[in-house]
Amino acid sequence: MNIFVIVRAVTYATLFIGLVLVYIPGLLLGSASARPAVFGVPQIIGMIMSTAGAAIALWCIFTFAFVGRGTPAPFDPPRRLVIRGPYRFVRNPMYIGTILALVGAALFYGSLSILIYAGVFFVATNLFVVLYEEWTLRRTFGSDYEAYCIGSGAGYRSEIGSRNGVNGISDIEAKAVRVAASECGQRVSFN
Image (cartoon, rainbow, N blue to C red; front, side):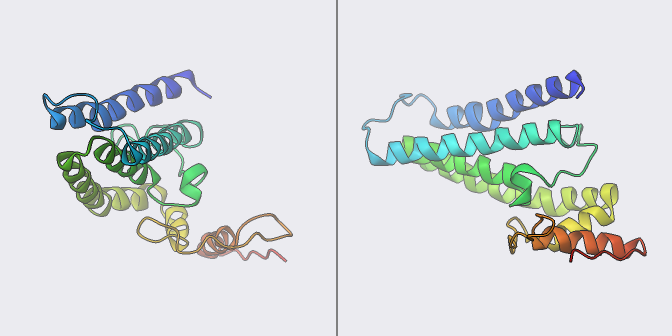
């Protein structure tokens, strides 16, 4: 593993999380107190959601570094298609984690402006995925990305698939391998 990949991933994580999850929500809170007026169940749920969302986003960033040898940033994308870690279950887990963290922050602070920001972020990331990311991934990774898309919906996997006892892979992984192999004129059997 190249140390520069890790440095780039840490730099990206700091900038992304700092801007999207700290700086912009801080601006939206304005001069309001850094603490909510009351501390109750909504704040506890908000903290749990924000922590889980940030953890998912970090997991994605480091999966990109260690598996894909790049970052999630469009200017420094992974060199390999990433379908491990959280991407095994969901096609866009970083966006889901970020939105979860933002909604958690909105709940924690009781902030309508952060909730609206989370909605704007959701719309913007969906447009980015549809208009740029999916096209770029298809162009870069070709049939490998197409095979990955077969087992996934527009963000969530449409089916997780059961484990195949013989090879220990899910039905979706087996289907993706079969499709990719058929495009190369090969035939694959898992029995």
